[in-house]
Length: 85
Image (cartoon, rainbow, N blue to C red):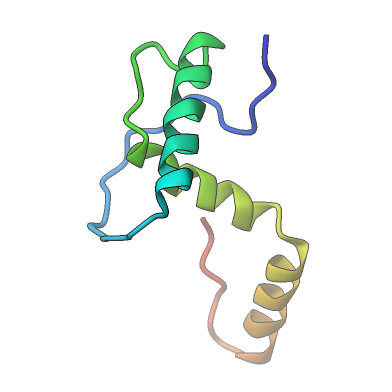
């Protein structure tokens, strides 16, 4: 079984956003979706576009510099709580 960074995708109300991706990135997303389905991370084929948000979310969650900067920004703005995700 392949160990992917993404697991099953949550069904959440999305915000509409339009992005342009290089064709190579889209092909990689398609391949990732196929591997995710085969590895048991999804029960139905996932549309490649649905992988983008969880991938960005995972990237930001594991970016230590981002987490540190976010904490520092929250501490430097008294009276405002950091947005939790």
